[in-house]
Amino acid sequence: MPKLRIAGIQFNPVLGQVEQNVAKIRSLAATLTKPIDLLVLPELAVTGYNFKNAAEIQPFLEGRTGPTYSLARDLSTLYKCTTIVGYPENYEGTTYNLAMVVNEEGDLVHNYRKTHLYETDEAWGCVENPEKDFAAVDLVLGKGSERQTIRTSIGICMDLNPYKFTAPFNEFEFSMSAYANLARLVVVPTAWLDSESPDIQEDCSDKEKLELAAKIKKQLETETYPDAKDLLTLLIDYWIVRLFPFLSHPMNGLPKQPQKTTAVICNRTGIEDQTFYGGSLCILQFDRSIPETLDTDSNNPSVSVINSAGRATEEVIYLEVDV
Ligand code: GLN
Image 1 (cartoon, rainbow, N blue to C red):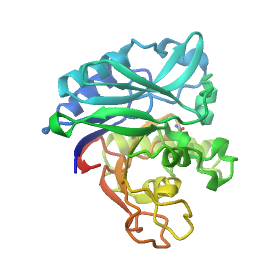
Image 2 (tube, protein in one colour):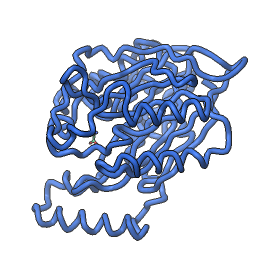
Image 3 (cartoon, protein in one colour):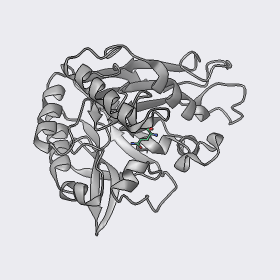
């Protein structure tokens, strides 16, 4: 069985601090001690995500060359791996939220634009991917005799959710496309909110949200945030539900596919204003040859959480998987 060596970097990209974020990514990558084939970074990893409006993000929009591409090229050639990383794109005057794929030679081989937008994307003037088909891409990954073409579905954060949170939950737009495309690899860079993020606490007043944000910020700075290093499976369990077509479950009437599907969900940590991100970067593997159970979360034996990061920590995770 061919092996794929995957690494993901979870960290806190500081809004607008490109040089600082690039340095952080480089230093975290430098802690890798084993060869890798695929490196995944979060959504808008180099620029930060929570821009308030189009004017604020304007200086940080990139093209096919820019700080994100330069970094991805450097990392790919240094570690002889394929790098997938998110950035805000200006394409012929239109703004997209994009993930680029850069191969071992440092060549840009694929771009994916976010299809389901979150309110933050809309605030900074991002436009939906006009092609709403979540097309898969064949990535050539691995080294030597392990080199192989792997059908891959790339999504960005909100793509895992129902369109605008209004589409039927069980339409599973992104994961149904990945299933239909026989994806063996699913890669999702994210900037996913923690359930304790102040801005989504509907019962809190504006003042309470501000206070909560200040408290979380302080705890993160002093490394006393509760459960920071522990994995809370809340996010991971939710992501597993959203990948339901790959799960062995009595309600999954889709024909079984022979291949396993490996998912890399690469979230960030940290707090930007009142938005607190929930980490939990994980590598999951789904295998429908394992018998069904009623569980729709990490208790279901057909999905293994084969590596994952903490809730609020900056770290690199590494895993060698049979794909
Ligand atoms: N639904 C996601 C969240 O709540 C979307 C965020 C995003 O698209 N960056 O975090």
